[in-house]
Length: 241
Ligand SMILES: C[S@@+](CC[C@H](N)C(=O)[O-])C[C@H]1O[C@@H](n2cnc3c(N)ncnc32)[C@H](O)[C@@H]1O
Image (cartoon, rainbow, N blue to C red; front, side, top):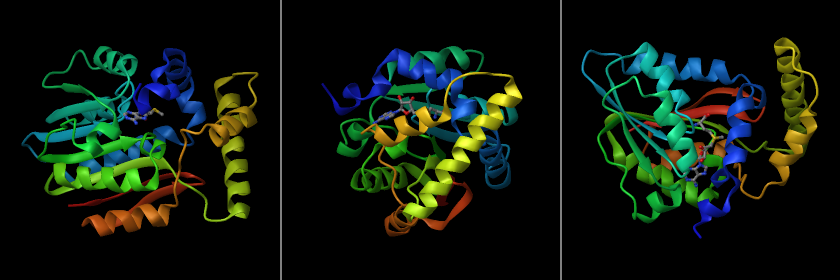
């Protein structure tokens, strides 16, 4: 059994729970997607078709949101889960020129899976924190190789708080977000602290410091490396080739 197959993401009910509740679980999820769209509009909006790679695509929400605003995109979506890929195929069935690749990040790192190259933008959302820091560094190198010169990598992900004190506050911020979001949607029940406990205890969550990841991107050769947005542990960061 591969490492991915041993993780919760290979279980259909785990994926379904995430997809049903992602707007509650992920702080400012819609805002973060809006920032990715703004990034694309600012740096990549031109007439010719742009190649996009969505790593850990889930049900394809990031690609879908970009396609709705910018038609001239040729996307490739990658995920380790058959279930997620079939949801992405269903979601994107009205669009043309879309490729899907079933593979794990570990296979990409090992070079046993090919994700193509010449991408103008590689995005990932809430997926790379499942890798160790060494694996993240190796994936950043694979991403760099797969980018067109001048192309961009943008990652929405959770990061490790630099101190225990900050971590305590970031968890409180997260809990407050989930309470507010549920109230605004009129949803009762469910304890946000259960989600936080699950995040903290699941072995497959391996968040690393933002600074270490920005450093790894710079070491890999990325330019214009920065954190583009941050709210507690939820962040958007990346750079250009
Ligand atoms: C939290 S979901 C995010 C999905 C989507 N990007 C979003 O923002 O809604 C994480 C996704 O990453 C995929 N994933 C997790 N670990 C992976 C790995 N090691 N290799 C490939 N895909 C992985 C899961 O199957 C899942 O679809």
